[in-house]
Image (cartoon, rainbow over all chains, first blue to last red; front, side, top):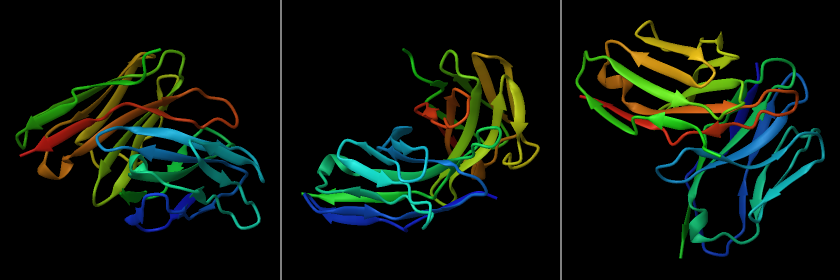
Length: 113
Length: 115
């Protein structure tokens, strides 16, 4: 079945540092890939997405590129801010049938001033 | 537009009591999902519906859990009887179907504490 593996957290960075959160996936077809973010006390919200190979999703300074050859969708940001502190979830959606979304375990990011 | 609305936001109950969580999806969305989030197990899909029909309930922990969607604008998740290990944040999410979508819109969650 489909699965998503993302790096263990927590990740602690200083403000303005470079961020990478690794995500790899296993799927039988050609899924859409997503990054969701969860701020403290809130539900998940979509951060960015990519629907086909080599697509780059971007939002709020975050980027991720759909790499079919390495089955990866790593999240990057060039300069993190304290307000980026949250839990980040990588996810995929199966295109082949009912749209079941599979989430990774989440990576907690803490940015310190 | 209103987002996904869940109630109650917080529920504290005693072991053995019945708990009902409610969800109003975004109008026009034809998929509805119930998730449970805990520190130990992360985010777990419990059940999801398409056009009010349950499609996959394999994530429902046991017979104490049940979910219904009587119409396109309302769903409930019921736990009877509740146990302390059911303490978690329960999220409802909805989405619009179609190939290549899969974007979920989450509610703010219902935090359940079973004493």
